[in-house]
Length: 142
Image 1 (spheres, rainbow, N blue to C red):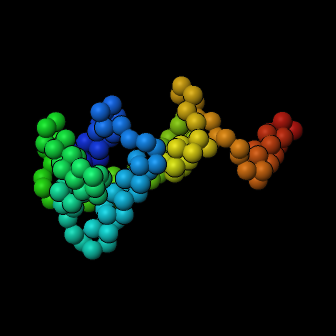
Image 2 (cartoon, rainbow, N blue to C red):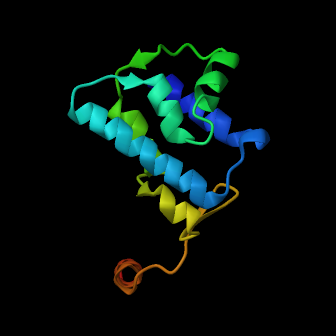
Image 3 (cartoon, rainbow, N blue to C red):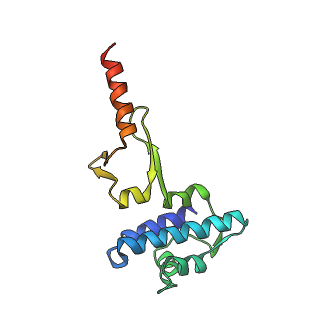
């Protein structure tokens, strides 16, 4: 499934396949739901069906992209939850002991921004701000 995820990412970065933000979000959601359903039913993902889900107006487009660009992906393959969950959620380690996790939609809606290699949280909740300020105050008093 990682190869399928790589192909989807490569395709989405190609200017000839660029979509408006809403259409891309809808395709990500439908792809996630399809993969999740296949996992739940212990079924394999069908590349032809997946291609139609990604773009119902050009149902062979993704499958052709996979084939034309040399991705080694069978017509049917087992879903990999760790891979398709990346369609909805980003998690990882920043620096030191900092771990981050947020929905892809938070990036799309600009609640999380990337400035070079810096992540910026827009409009942090008052509770989070208070926790941070308290931790800094506690550290300053020592």
